[in-house]
Amino acid sequence: MITEATARALAGAWRIFLGDRAALSAFDVSAEGFWRSFGAVLFTAPTYLLIILFEERMRIAADPLLVVGAPFYAARGAGFLIDIAFMPVLLALAARPLKIEAGYSAYIVVRNWGGVLILLPMAGLMVLTGWGILPLGLSTLLQLGVLIMALRFQVELARTALGWPLGPALGLAGIEYLSSLFVVLVTDRLFGV
Image 1 (tube, rainbow, N blue to C red):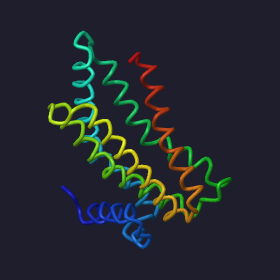
Image 2: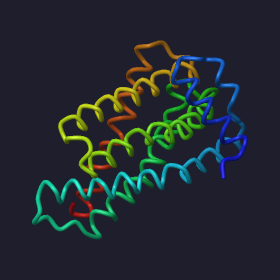
Image 3: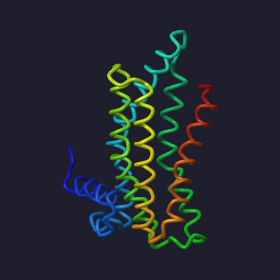
Image 4: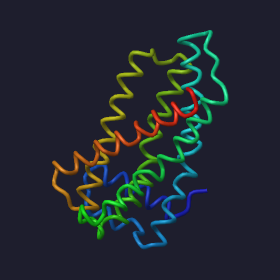
């Protein structure tokens, strides 16, 4: 069930994606709101599970002899959980040197709720591709578009929550993307995927 606070946070994340800096007021950036924002995982986990199921389906379609089993699911599950915490911990450690203590909580709160919006189009593409409705080449191109949208959101988030200009905001968005990629690569290696 979506509460009023959740609906307000999701709408606020969408407004930030559109460049509305005033949308930050839609979020509870208190200590309690910070920890509550990690509840967004309740919305992202089912979507992520759907992505994993269709990723497995597409891997098998590409290589019918491939056996995708427990290590694949363990790697994706561990990667999902680590990715939720990795960047918040990294930014918490770097908050003082980066002088972002004042905006740190807001950044993480909006990042957590924005993750719900980012995963939805990716899940839709995976489902359409897995069902054979979208050809793989077109799906890959559209996934690139979703990635660009996600990076744009990260840039707007850094500009809004941290007050950063475009250049540093782009840099942080790139670090966010690379950190997620790093987590996937490490968990794949750890689980032998």
